[in-house]
Image (cartoon, rainbow, N blue to C red; front, side):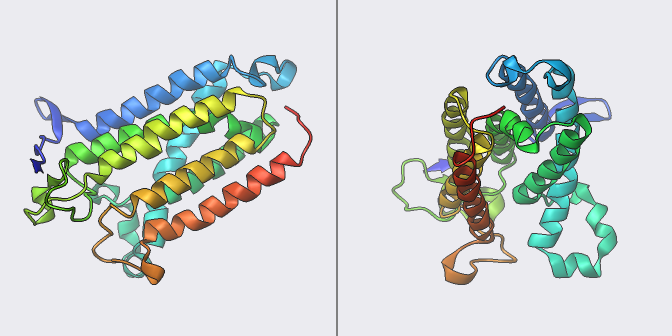
Length: 271
């Protein structure tokens, strides 16, 4: 049985300035996205697009800026709407209290979709072309976020068998019984494994929308599996059919991904 090391959330203290590990993982996520997106410029079909629709490094900068805005706004609103709608309806001003915590991946994803729709229209590009471009660059950022969750000792897993070799005690959970280190599971599945699969898949000749559909299905499936090991939010618990809120949010995500992939497969190959 392992004990969570209870790492100091502050990575570096410079006088009154505290640099938190969680902030560093966000910087790592943005840096990895920029690096991978720069590599994507050399991949087809983007490398062959010329004229007014040609892709450049400036596009990556704009995509990243808008994406960050979409993650923050969408993630916060998604948490308030999906997880605590009654509370925030009664305390609307606290929606803006982001320092108190509370972000939703699914809400952040919707925010990113909206921000990239605006980007695509402003650049007169097909929206799915933009989403296919960024989809393989996202999982490493998700992996970085899970590292931050582990360092903070948050979003721990459900109780595990006492003889599970990697079962871990999270003192912040209020229990000294071993749990699944679900942050590590999500790091491996939604982060590294999804990145490898999606990056390789995107390198081949794909119809517009197929890479985006593959991302929705891949993330939805891996997150659905991980939720079996992750402790549900204490104010929600297990919902209908023995599923958590995270799993219920993955169901339409997987369905949308399957539909998008099939729809794209029936369209002609284009850029």
